[in-house]
Length: 572
Image (cartoon, rainbow, N blue to C red):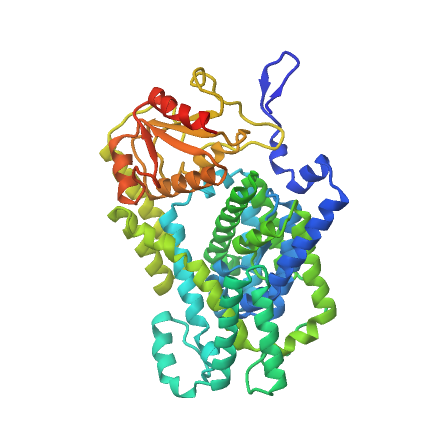
């Protein structure tokens, strides 16, 4: 609800409201013992998922497994306690594997600590400068391209442990890895094959037939028991890393010099960029599952604090984890307390059961990371974007190729620049002049919400809502659609989206429209588009979203849309 002064005039809420953690908001609204019980169960469930995953991601990043657990405990707790999302789960993710591995190989682990510390400061500055509203407008082909590229690199990095290859050192360059694997094919370990592919089969079977079971933990635990019981000659966490400490390390500040800062600046920027984008993507997914609304700048501040603290404790970079956040929601989480409890449970494991981790075979963790890589690849979204216009396909493929073959930082920079050039080219073709349009919308805090427009609502039947889009629906404004559902409306029977002033739509806009329609349908809401111009209509049809029983409903204007909505409302 909007804030008003003593004369009834609407006033702007204080800026600091945007940085109040969701935890504070929830506690002010009231928090019961039943809420704590539900959050504790959800936190335990997520901790069970996070345990093997954190160790596997740390090893894939070139670090020791305890670094992943430290990150979950320190950064995971702070992201939940200080963040702007109700159910966000933070920790190490696959998105960081490539850049973290490269930093450790080039500058050592102390270099990674300094880069993570610098990234945390960058995120703090970005949050307090309220840049979160801009970061979430990264083009979908860029995000899908570098995410799929990271997935390929993660999968490739696990071939050695997956097959138990006897290799003194795996080449750093992607194109050099596969010839080296082929040369070492004669050293394949039958025991590693049995353990890794057995764990992989178990994970896939449990995900299909018992999705509520902790597939990762069960696969790693049973593999560990098998290796111990049959004395299989396989590398384990104990034999390679010497086990896991039972305590958290004391915080320590890294060595800092101007030369090191300048050298690590590009890596720190990449870490900050990935943390910001990944956390906001995860928060959007959580909003879609819960019907809530996150505050992006508060989330960035929490990411900054969490990464700074993780660096001081010797941990890895951290961000919002989409899969773990979804697990948290499905497990019944009600507040950020669930994320805090997930960190507490992982800490309890470190204090009590850390010695047991020494028996975990690396082959089973490789199987876990193969599944992580497959999920990150988002092959369906990649295939869908390949049906987009040639420009979007070029951005997608160039970003993907540069991520795999060159460098993640270069891939992101080139991808964003190409997307911007593509957008300017399209806008030049549209030749439409509009006034008063701002493609970037600000965010609001939990104490105020924008009021709905009334001029286009006079003739609306009960159960029908209408929203008008103005300007190009491109990657910079695509999130506007999802924000529409957070304006306080109680899921109407019909939602009319007026698009007569939308001259252009790109692949990100189509993706946002697809997600918008899916979310509406999940609540029993029918979406009608009115006044769709030629370019948006052609773009929707090209990417498989034309008119039809399973597609979109089009109307010539608002009046026609209202007439089409009346029988839908009447038959409710």
